[in-house]
Image 1 (cartoon, rainbow, N blue to C red):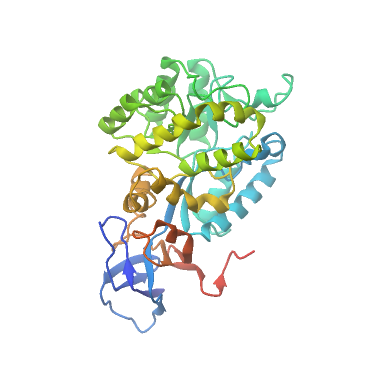
Image 2: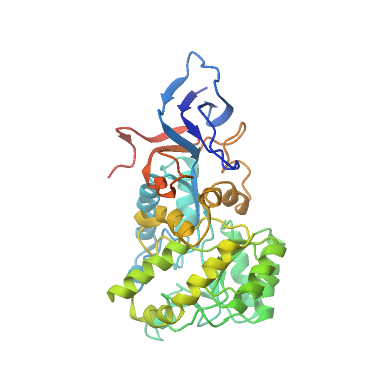
Length: 410
Protein backbone atom coordinates (compact mmCIF):
# COMPACT_ATOMS: atom_id res chain seq x y z
CA UNK A 1 0.00 0.00 0.00
CA UNK A 2 1.49 3.34 -1.10
CA UNK A 3 1.21 6.15 1.42
CA UNK A 4 1.95 9.86 1.13
CA UNK A 5 1.63 12.77 3.54
CA UNK A 6 1.33 16.27 2.10
CA UNK A 7 2.13 19.23 4.34
CA UNK A 8 0.94 22.71 3.34
CA UNK A 9 0.43 26.20 4.75
CA UNK A 10 -3.06 26.77 3.32
CA UNK A 11 -5.85 24.55 2.01
CA UNK A 12 -9.00 25.13 -0.05
CA UNK A 13 -11.18 22.02 0.05
CA UNK A 14 -13.42 22.98 -2.89
CA UNK A 15 -16.43 23.74 -0.69
CA UNK A 16 -15.45 26.18 2.05
CA UNK A 17 -15.79 29.94 2.16
CA UNK A 18 -12.15 30.58 3.10
CA UNK A 19 -8.75 28.96 3.15
CA UNK A 20 -7.87 26.67 6.06
CA UNK A 21 -4.49 25.61 7.36
CA UNK A 22 -1.81 24.80 8.11
CA UNK A 23 -2.86 21.29 7.18
CA UNK A 24 -1.63 17.80 6.46
CA UNK A 25 -3.22 15.27 4.10
CA UNK A 26 -2.74 11.51 4.38
CA UNK A 27 -3.15 9.59 1.12
CA UNK A 28 -3.29 5.81 0.85
CA UNK A 29 -3.43 4.02 -2.50
CA UNK A 30 -4.60 7.14 -4.29
CA UNK A 31 -7.40 7.98 -1.83
CA UNK A 32 -7.44 10.72 0.79
CA UNK A 33 -7.84 9.05 4.19
CA UNK A 34 -7.31 11.97 6.59
CA UNK A 35 -7.02 15.76 6.59
CA UNK A 36 -6.14 17.60 9.78
CA UNK A 37 -3.74 20.06 11.32
CA UNK A 38 -1.62 16.98 11.98
CA UNK A 39 -2.13 13.45 10.64
CA UNK A 40 -0.31 10.20 11.37
CA UNK A 41 2.97 9.71 9.53
CA UNK A 42 3.21 5.98 8.74
CA UNK A 43 6.75 4.67 8.66
CA UNK A 44 6.46 3.80 4.96
CA UNK A 45 4.86 7.10 3.94
CA UNK A 46 6.51 9.56 1.59
CA UNK A 47 6.51 13.00 3.24
CA UNK A 48 6.07 15.92 0.83
CA UNK A 49 6.43 19.35 2.44
CA UNK A 50 4.85 21.95 0.15
CA UNK A 51 5.93 24.82 2.35
CA UNK A 52 3.98 28.05 2.00
CA UNK A 53 1.82 26.82 -0.86
CA UNK A 54 -1.97 26.69 -1.11
CA UNK A 55 -3.32 23.21 -1.79
CA UNK A 56 -6.69 22.60 -3.49
CA UNK A 57 -8.46 19.96 -5.58
CA UNK A 58 -7.16 19.38 -9.09
CA UNK A 59 -8.73 21.73 -11.62
CA UNK A 60 -11.58 20.39 -13.77
CA UNK A 61 -12.13 21.90 -17.22
CA UNK A 62 -15.58 20.87 -18.42
CA UNK A 63 -15.25 22.11 -22.01
CA UNK A 64 -12.21 21.29 -24.13
CA UNK A 65 -11.56 19.95 -27.62
CA UNK A 66 -8.40 17.84 -27.58
CA UNK A 67 -8.85 16.80 -31.22
CA UNK A 68 -9.78 20.15 -32.76
CA UNK A 69 -7.70 23.09 -33.92
CA UNK A 70 -10.11 25.98 -34.14
CA UNK A 71 -7.82 28.29 -36.09
CA UNK A 72 -6.95 25.64 -38.70
CA UNK A 73 -10.20 23.71 -38.99
CA UNK A 74 -10.14 23.05 -42.73
CA UNK A 75 -6.70 21.48 -42.60
CA UNK A 76 -6.86 19.82 -39.20
CA UNK A 77 -10.15 17.95 -39.49
CA UNK A 78 -8.85 16.15 -42.58
CA UNK A 79 -6.02 14.56 -40.60
CA UNK A 80 -6.35 10.88 -39.77
CA UNK A 81 -7.86 9.78 -36.46
CA UNK A 82 -4.55 8.50 -35.11
CA UNK A 83 -2.90 11.88 -35.66
CA UNK A 84 -5.76 13.59 -33.84
CA UNK A 85 -5.53 11.16 -30.91
CA UNK A 86 -1.76 11.51 -30.58
CA UNK A 87 -1.94 15.28 -30.78
CA UNK A 88 -4.78 15.22 -28.26
CA UNK A 89 -2.70 13.13 -25.87
CA UNK A 90 0.15 15.63 -26.04
CA UNK A 91 -2.24 18.54 -25.41
CA UNK A 92 -3.89 16.75 -22.49
CA UNK A 93 -0.53 16.01 -20.87
CA UNK A 94 0.71 19.57 -21.26
CA UNK A 95 -2.57 20.95 -19.90
CA UNK A 96 -2.25 18.70 -16.87
CA UNK A 97 0.97 20.52 -16.00
CA UNK A 98 -1.16 23.62 -15.32
CA UNK A 99 -3.18 21.69 -12.73
CA UNK A 100 -6.01 20.22 -14.83
CA UNK A 101 -6.48 16.65 -13.64
CA UNK A 102 -9.93 16.08 -15.20
CA UNK A 103 -11.22 17.22 -18.60
CA UNK A 104 -14.59 16.89 -20.32
CA UNK A 105 -13.95 16.71 -24.04
CA UNK A 106 -16.85 18.21 -25.96
CA UNK A 107 -16.45 16.54 -29.31
CA UNK A 108 -14.33 16.16 -32.38
CA UNK A 109 -14.98 16.30 -36.12
CA UNK A 110 -13.95 12.81 -37.12
CA UNK A 111 -15.62 9.73 -38.53
CA UNK A 112 -13.99 7.59 -35.84
CA UNK A 113 -13.70 7.80 -32.05
CA UNK A 114 -10.26 9.24 -31.15
CA UNK A 115 -11.29 10.80 -27.83
CA UNK A 116 -12.94 7.56 -26.67
CA UNK A 117 -9.71 5.72 -27.51
CA UNK A 118 -7.68 8.35 -25.69
CA UNK A 119 -9.91 8.22 -22.60
CA UNK A 120 -9.65 4.44 -22.42
CA UNK A 121 -5.87 4.43 -22.93
CA UNK A 122 -5.42 6.83 -20.00
CA UNK A 123 -7.89 4.99 -17.80
CA UNK A 124 -6.18 1.66 -18.42
CA UNK A 125 -2.76 3.08 -17.57
CA UNK A 126 -1.41 2.55 -21.07
CA UNK A 127 -0.48 6.24 -21.18
CA UNK A 128 -0.45 9.00 -18.57
CA UNK A 129 -2.77 11.99 -18.67
CA UNK A 130 -5.73 13.70 -17.04
CA UNK A 131 -8.97 11.86 -16.40
CA UNK A 132 -11.26 12.27 -19.43
CA UNK A 133 -15.04 12.46 -19.64
CA UNK A 134 -16.06 12.36 -23.29
CA UNK A 135 -18.78 13.49 -25.66
CA UNK A 136 -17.32 11.83 -28.73
CA UNK A 137 -18.98 13.88 -31.49
CA UNK A 138 -21.13 16.97 -31.93
CA UNK A 139 -24.63 16.43 -33.27
CA UNK A 140 -26.49 19.15 -35.15
CA UNK A 141 -28.91 19.78 -37.97
CA UNK A 142 -27.68 19.99 -41.55
CA UNK A 143 -26.18 23.44 -41.88
CA UNK A 144 -25.77 23.65 -38.10
CA UNK A 145 -22.64 24.34 -36.08
CA UNK A 146 -21.36 20.75 -36.36
CA UNK A 147 -21.84 20.53 -40.13
CA UNK A 148 -18.53 21.06 -41.90
CA UNK A 149 -19.91 20.74 -45.44
CA UNK A 150 -19.69 24.51 -45.75
CA UNK A 151 -15.91 24.28 -45.34
CA UNK A 152 -15.48 22.05 -48.39
CA UNK A 153 -16.97 21.65 -51.87
CA UNK A 154 -20.52 20.29 -51.66
CA UNK A 155 -19.44 17.05 -53.32
CA UNK A 156 -17.08 16.30 -50.41
CA UNK A 157 -18.79 13.83 -48.02
CA UNK A 158 -16.23 12.50 -45.55
CA UNK A 159 -18.39 11.49 -42.59
CA UNK A 160 -16.85 14.24 -40.49
CA UNK A 161 -20.18 15.85 -39.60
CA UNK A 162 -22.79 14.16 -37.44
CA UNK A 163 -25.95 15.73 -38.83
CA UNK A 164 -29.61 14.76 -38.77
CA UNK A 165 -32.90 16.21 -39.96
CA UNK A 166 -35.44 13.67 -38.78
CA UNK A 167 -36.33 12.00 -35.47
CA UNK A 168 -35.16 8.62 -36.71
CA UNK A 169 -31.73 9.90 -37.72
CA UNK A 170 -31.36 11.89 -34.49
CA UNK A 171 -32.07 8.76 -32.46
CA UNK A 172 -29.61 6.78 -34.59
CA UNK A 173 -26.80 9.26 -33.91
CA UNK A 174 -27.48 9.41 -30.17
CA UNK A 175 -27.64 5.61 -29.98
CA UNK A 176 -24.30 5.34 -31.80
CA UNK A 177 -22.65 7.70 -29.30
CA UNK A 178 -23.97 5.47 -26.51
CA UNK A 179 -22.97 2.24 -28.23
CA UNK A 180 -19.39 3.33 -28.76
CA UNK A 181 -18.93 4.43 -25.14
CA UNK A 182 -19.70 8.13 -25.00
CA UNK A 183 -20.21 9.60 -21.54
CA UNK A 184 -22.23 12.61 -22.70
CA UNK A 185 -24.28 13.69 -25.68
CA UNK A 186 -23.14 16.99 -27.18
CA UNK A 187 -25.43 18.87 -29.52
CA UNK A 188 -25.57 22.33 -31.06
CA UNK A 189 -28.94 24.05 -31.29
CA UNK A 190 -27.63 27.33 -32.70
CA UNK A 191 -24.83 28.31 -35.05
CA UNK A 192 -21.35 29.25 -33.87
CA UNK A 193 -18.56 31.65 -34.68
CA UNK A 194 -15.73 29.56 -36.12
CA UNK A 195 -17.94 27.34 -38.29
CA UNK A 196 -18.96 28.03 -41.86
CA UNK A 197 -22.42 28.99 -43.05
CA UNK A 198 -24.30 29.24 -39.74
CA UNK A 199 -25.11 31.99 -37.25
CA UNK A 200 -25.02 31.84 -33.41
CA UNK A 201 -28.01 34.21 -33.32
CA UNK A 202 -30.20 31.65 -35.10
CA UNK A 203 -31.70 28.44 -33.69
CA UNK A 204 -30.99 25.40 -35.87
CA UNK A 205 -33.04 22.64 -34.19
CA UNK A 206 -36.83 22.67 -34.25
CA UNK A 207 -38.45 22.10 -30.88
CA UNK A 208 -39.44 18.52 -31.64
CA UNK A 209 -35.91 17.73 -32.86
CA UNK A 210 -34.31 19.06 -29.66
CA UNK A 211 -36.85 17.17 -27.57
CA UNK A 212 -36.21 13.97 -29.55
CA UNK A 213 -32.47 14.17 -28.96
CA UNK A 214 -32.87 14.86 -25.25
CA UNK A 215 -35.46 12.12 -24.75
CA UNK A 216 -33.26 9.55 -26.50
CA UNK A 217 -30.24 10.50 -24.40
CA UNK A 218 -32.31 10.42 -21.23
CA UNK A 219 -33.64 6.94 -22.04
CA UNK A 220 -30.05 5.74 -22.51
CA UNK A 221 -28.89 7.39 -19.28
CA UNK A 222 -26.65 10.00 -20.92
CA UNK A 223 -26.62 13.67 -19.85
CA UNK A 224 -26.90 16.32 -22.57
CA UNK A 225 -24.64 19.34 -23.13
CA UNK A 226 -25.88 21.97 -25.59
CA UNK A 227 -23.73 24.46 -27.47
CA UNK A 228 -26.06 27.43 -27.62
CA UNK A 229 -25.90 31.09 -28.52
CA UNK A 230 -29.21 32.77 -29.30
CA UNK A 231 -31.41 33.63 -26.31
CA UNK A 232 -34.16 31.41 -27.71
CA UNK A 233 -31.65 28.60 -28.19
CA UNK A 234 -30.75 28.77 -24.50
CA UNK A 235 -34.42 28.51 -23.57
CA UNK A 236 -35.01 25.65 -26.00
CA UNK A 237 -32.15 23.69 -24.42
CA UNK A 238 -33.55 24.32 -20.95
CA UNK A 239 -37.04 23.21 -21.98
CA UNK A 240 -35.50 19.96 -23.24
CA UNK A 241 -33.84 19.34 -19.86
CA UNK A 242 -30.19 19.84 -20.87
CA UNK A 243 -27.83 19.33 -17.94
CA UNK A 244 -25.35 21.94 -19.18
CA UNK A 245 -25.54 24.92 -21.49
CA UNK A 246 -22.24 25.72 -23.20
CA UNK A 247 -21.27 29.33 -23.97
CA UNK A 248 -24.77 30.90 -23.72
CA UNK A 249 -23.41 33.74 -25.82
CA UNK A 250 -26.65 35.72 -26.02
CA UNK A 251 -28.64 34.46 -23.02
CA UNK A 252 -31.25 36.92 -21.73
CA UNK A 253 -32.84 37.51 -18.33
CA UNK A 254 -35.63 35.02 -19.01
CA UNK A 255 -33.12 32.32 -19.89
CA UNK A 256 -31.13 33.05 -16.73
CA UNK A 257 -34.29 32.74 -14.65
CA UNK A 258 -35.19 29.44 -16.32
CA UNK A 259 -31.70 28.07 -15.64
CA UNK A 260 -31.86 29.14 -12.00
CA UNK A 261 -35.24 27.46 -11.49
CA UNK A 262 -34.35 24.35 -13.48
CA UNK A 263 -30.97 23.72 -11.87
CA UNK A 264 -29.07 23.57 -15.15
CA UNK A 265 -25.35 24.32 -15.21
CA UNK A 266 -23.88 27.06 -17.37
CA UNK A 267 -20.36 26.75 -18.81
CA UNK A 268 -19.73 30.30 -20.09
CA UNK A 269 -16.22 29.89 -21.67
CA UNK A 270 -15.32 33.52 -21.01
CA UNK A 271 -11.63 33.37 -21.98
CA UNK A 272 -12.70 32.34 -25.49
CA UNK A 273 -14.41 35.72 -25.82
CA UNK A 274 -11.24 37.53 -24.74
CA UNK A 275 -9.19 35.48 -27.23
CA UNK A 276 -11.58 36.25 -30.10
CA UNK A 277 -11.76 39.92 -29.14
CA UNK A 278 -7.97 40.23 -29.26
CA UNK A 279 -7.82 38.48 -32.65
CA UNK A 280 -10.62 40.66 -34.02
CA UNK A 281 -8.75 43.79 -32.96
CA UNK A 282 -5.53 42.47 -34.54
CA UNK A 283 -7.32 41.53 -37.76
CA UNK A 284 -6.51 37.85 -37.24
CA UNK A 285 -9.95 36.39 -36.56
CA UNK A 286 -10.90 34.01 -39.41
CA UNK A 287 -13.19 35.58 -41.98
CA UNK A 288 -16.14 33.28 -41.24
CA UNK A 289 -16.03 34.38 -37.58
CA UNK A 290 -15.16 38.07 -37.82
CA UNK A 291 -18.49 39.40 -39.03
CA UNK A 292 -20.54 37.37 -36.57
CA UNK A 293 -18.35 37.97 -33.55
CA UNK A 294 -17.91 41.66 -34.33
CA UNK A 295 -21.69 42.03 -34.40
CA UNK A 296 -22.24 40.16 -31.13
CA UNK A 297 -19.27 40.84 -28.87
CA UNK A 298 -20.88 43.60 -26.82
CA UNK A 299 -23.98 41.51 -26.18
CA UNK A 300 -21.81 38.48 -25.31
CA UNK A 301 -20.07 40.50 -22.62
CA UNK A 302 -23.41 41.74 -21.28
CA UNK A 303 -24.66 38.14 -21.17
CA UNK A 304 -21.57 37.10 -19.20
CA UNK A 305 -22.31 39.80 -16.64
CA UNK A 306 -25.88 38.48 -16.35
CA UNK A 307 -24.50 35.01 -15.67
CA UNK A 308 -22.07 36.40 -13.08
CA UNK A 309 -24.86 38.26 -11.28
CA UNK A 310 -27.12 35.17 -11.19
CA UNK A 311 -27.35 32.21 -8.86
CA UNK A 312 -26.94 29.71 -11.68
CA UNK A 313 -24.39 26.94 -11.02
CA UNK A 314 -21.41 28.05 -13.13
CA UNK A 315 -18.90 25.36 -14.08
CA UNK A 316 -15.39 26.10 -15.32
CA UNK A 317 -14.93 25.45 -19.03
CA UNK A 318 -12.66 27.05 -21.58
CA UNK A 319 -13.23 25.76 -25.13
CA UNK A 320 -9.48 25.10 -25.38
CA UNK A 321 -8.74 23.63 -28.77
CA UNK A 322 -10.48 26.61 -30.28
CA UNK A 323 -7.58 28.59 -28.78
CA UNK A 324 -4.27 27.43 -27.25
CA UNK A 325 -4.42 25.14 -24.23
CA UNK A 326 -1.63 27.19 -22.66
CA UNK A 327 -4.19 29.99 -22.20
CA UNK A 328 -6.84 27.81 -20.54
CA UNK A 329 -5.87 28.66 -16.97
CA UNK A 330 -6.66 32.32 -17.78
CA UNK A 331 -10.36 31.37 -17.61
CA UNK A 332 -10.16 32.02 -13.86
CA UNK A 333 -9.20 35.63 -14.51
CA UNK A 334 -11.78 36.02 -17.28
CA UNK A 335 -14.52 34.84 -14.91
CA UNK A 336 -13.48 37.30 -12.22
CA UNK A 337 -13.26 40.14 -14.75
CA UNK A 338 -16.89 39.42 -15.70
CA UNK A 339 -17.99 39.77 -12.09
CA UNK A 340 -17.69 36.24 -10.66
CA UNK A 341 -15.97 36.24 -7.27
CA UNK A 342 -12.62 34.44 -6.95
CA UNK A 343 -14.15 31.96 -4.50
CA UNK A 344 -16.99 31.13 -6.91
CA UNK A 345 -14.48 30.73 -9.75
CA UNK A 346 -12.42 28.28 -7.67
CA UNK A 347 -15.54 26.28 -6.82
CA UNK A 348 -16.53 26.36 -10.50
CA UNK A 349 -13.32 24.46 -11.32
CA UNK A 350 -13.61 22.01 -8.43
CA UNK A 351 -16.79 21.02 -6.55
CA UNK A 352 -19.28 22.58 -9.01
CA UNK A 353 -17.53 21.03 -12.03
CA UNK A 354 -17.53 17.65 -10.29
CA UNK A 355 -21.25 18.05 -9.57
CA UNK A 356 -21.90 18.83 -13.24
CA UNK A 357 -20.00 15.69 -14.24
CA UNK A 358 -21.91 13.66 -11.62
CA UNK A 359 -18.63 12.61 -10.04
CA UNK A 360 -18.72 12.44 -6.26
CA UNK A 361 -15.14 11.15 -6.05
CA UNK A 362 -13.32 14.28 -7.27
CA UNK A 363 -13.50 18.07 -6.94
CA UNK A 364 -13.29 18.10 -3.13
CA UNK A 365 -10.50 17.42 -0.63
CA UNK A 366 -12.03 15.11 1.96
CA UNK A 367 -11.52 11.55 3.25
CA UNK A 368 -12.74 9.02 0.71
CA UNK A 369 -12.10 11.24 -2.33
CA UNK A 370 -9.51 10.61 -5.03
CA UNK A 371 -6.24 12.38 -4.32
CA UNK A 372 -6.37 14.82 -7.23
CA UNK A 373 -4.46 17.71 -5.71
CA UNK A 374 -2.64 20.81 -6.95
CA UNK A 375 -0.61 23.42 -5.13
CA UNK A 376 0.47 26.97 -5.92
CA UNK A 377 2.32 29.82 -4.27
CA UNK A 378 0.11 32.56 -2.85
CA UNK A 379 -3.58 32.93 -2.02
CA UNK A 380 -5.92 32.47 -5.04
CA UNK A 381 -8.90 33.95 -3.18
CA UNK A 382 -6.99 37.19 -2.59
CA UNK A 383 -5.55 37.17 -6.13
CA UNK A 384 -7.12 34.84 -8.69
CA UNK A 385 -4.06 35.21 -10.95
CA UNK A 386 -2.24 32.97 -8.47
CA UNK A 387 -3.90 30.05 -10.28
CA UNK A 388 -1.22 30.52 -12.95
CA UNK A 389 1.41 29.49 -10.38
CA UNK A 390 0.62 25.77 -10.05
CA UNK A 391 3.87 23.85 -9.53
CA UNK A 392 2.61 20.67 -7.88
CA UNK A 393 0.22 18.25 -9.58
CA UNK A 394 -1.05 14.95 -8.18
CA UNK A 395 -3.69 12.73 -9.77
CA UNK A 396 -5.00 9.66 -8.00
CA UNK A 397 -2.21 9.87 -5.44
CA UNK A 398 0.58 9.88 -8.03
CA UNK A 399 2.79 12.96 -8.31
CA UNK A 400 3.17 14.22 -11.87
CA UNK A 401 4.87 17.53 -11.15
CA UNK A 402 6.86 18.73 -8.15
CA UNK A 403 9.99 20.87 -8.00
CA UNK A 404 12.45 19.61 -10.65
CA UNK A 405 10.33 16.52 -11.34
CA UNK A 406 7.89 16.97 -14.21
CA UNK A 407 6.73 13.85 -16.03
CA UNK A 408 5.32 15.83 -18.96
CA UNK A 409 8.06 18.41 -19.40
CA UNK A 410 8.65 18.78 -23.13
